[in-house]
Amino acid sequence: MSISTMTSRERFIAAVKNEQPDRVPACPCLSYMVPAHRTGKPFWKVAWDADPPLWKAYLDAVRYFGIDGRLIYGGLRFTDDKAAMVKRESVREQVTPTRARSRTRITTPAGDLTTTGICDIDNPPTMTEKMIKDLRGDLPKLAYLFTEPTSYDATAADAMRREAGEDAVFCLSVIYPGFHQFNDFFDGGLEAAVAAYCDDPEPFEQLRLLVHNSTIAHARLMLDYRPDILYLGGSGTLTLSTPDWVRQFCLPTIKEVTRMAREAGVPTMLHSCGKERLLVDMFASETDLNCVNPLEAAPMGDCDLAEVKAAWGHRLSLAGNIHTTEVMLRGTPETVDAACREAIDAAGSGGGFLLMTGDQCGRDTPEENIFAFVEAAKRYGT
Image (cartoon, rainbow, N blue to C red; front, side):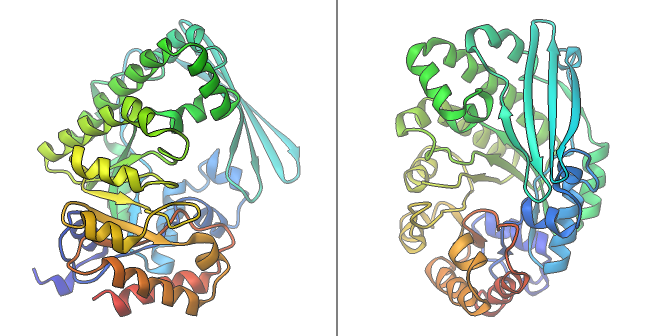
């Protein structure tokens, strides 16, 4: 096959594998806000009612803007006797015409956990009450949430994969433990998690092992299904942690998952917005990761594309790092064009580069700026 006939899916996979595609893929991150906004429906319809499912809204945006997409919304249904013992009951209320609230009770054989989330008409959901109130007391309950499944149903994944076709890579996503994740678990967020760790660090190793073992079991089944890419999600891995805590909590899982994927022949891509330069060194020298994103520039991040390319372009595929606020949201098509050309000049040589935004584009990003992003990849990325 001539590379001049590459589809979006083929182009994306080649770049993630650090190969030379026909051109640099155009992959602005439209993971949630832009697709949900384009439906014209309240965000709670997409987030909580799947009306439409987020993955369908995303594919609609992929085709509308003509980007090289990445479908990261799962699809496998795992079979697990322990998880089957869990019951979830949610009560929805309309707080105001523009805000909804959902209270959820998670009932396990070891006791209950409760969460509360709010969702505004034009913004993604936010958790206002999180499930861990007392880690030692809640660990037996969490064991029923972070389980080790042994089989899966691929009906939904097959349908998503067919719908994506050649317009987007089909990814399956795993999480890995760390304070970026504990921030979402602990009532009170990161501050509560750090305080709990400083007061009583021993149960955190139990929590790490619980999440680690669950992630490895899920990854094993995902690799059996053979997605185009195994996607590791870890927003804020370093920004919400310390280098030592990354090594303690995150790195063992990342090393094991990327090793498993390499042996299975499935490329891996890891997302960690925020500070990431130290992580690049760690991933390149100590894991089997294929591609890292979004390599945000200062002040949100600390990555210079040209420097990272020179240091690790021989080892890792790079994806980034157009500024989502100053360039995509507040800029003009001319601003976008110039920034994209600068990024491609910095990291596009020799392949192994995907033109992406530093993180997801904001809800009100002008459409003309997204179209300019795609055109710049075509103009400068061959």
